[in-house]
Image 1 (spheres, helix red, strand yellow):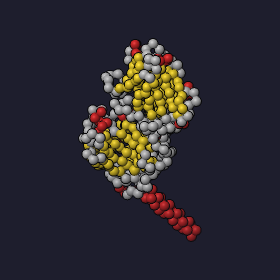
Image 2: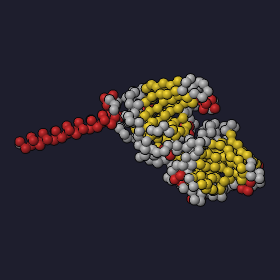
Image 3: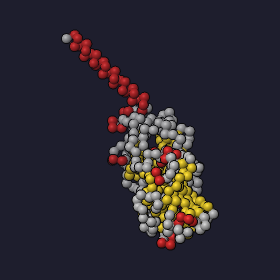
Image 4: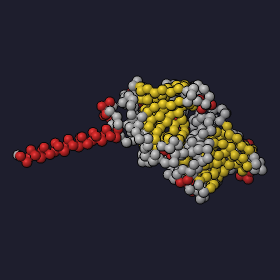
Length: 394
């Protein structure tokens, strides 16, 4: 009996020690008051970054949430129990005003209490979003501990933009090309810009709600190079879109009837004159200079295209992918697998496998070009082509 009592006492002491250890661990990892949030919210250094169910304070990774604004702009945050994803808890409400040219404002949530987080184990960023009024979007940034930003617009991955109902957005981390590494990411930033809204005829003030910001471990099937969801020359990989000339001229335009698109909102119109020369369009990845990024998870390049009319249809269009070693070329339709039909006035999705770009290193791609050459375009040396949804796919 005495041995049984001692054994029972030992078990009780061990259990108490384990409970104390677990509670200390939770406090050390979370830096939040565990009594102020629901039991289902106790996720620390796991996929869920912030569900805002504590109604303020630190997020689930121990980071703070705050606001910023330039002179002439405003921003504020609050926590809404009446507009929360799933009907319970809280959401983060960001109210912004950007009434003047050049101004911006927004909010951020830090990914740790020490200003650095390693997110290399994750493949995508996810969150739920809705707005007090429709037709909203904003710039989304990941910032590293050195202050380097990588950005895109939410509409690049939310077809049709933000509405008054909850929608989930999933963005592959491969889209944040400008980051040097995912090992030292410091914060997620939500930016509202006057100039962007003016260009796209959107209101200069409003309220956006966010909930369940998290990371996911499953790789997504595609990363978008550009979706043309707005009238803006920053592509979906955070770099510039522009025209290039080789003795002749080309120009692109977002300003045409929104009825001509394959997916949502707009397509891009690329007009060219390749008579006795060449011209085209480029998209740099990551920044204004092009930053090499590892896209080796993906296997192919795809885009939707169609000609404006029969007399403006090129016979062939050159696609160039630029990596750390140089330019690698494939042709539409010559190197496409589906379809092999000629370019026409019908929307078609063309697919080119990376293997068709001889010598390409998918681990260091930094730019893509669309090129019209007099020897390739055929009889229509002057023409116009629509493009939509350009991306890399697995």
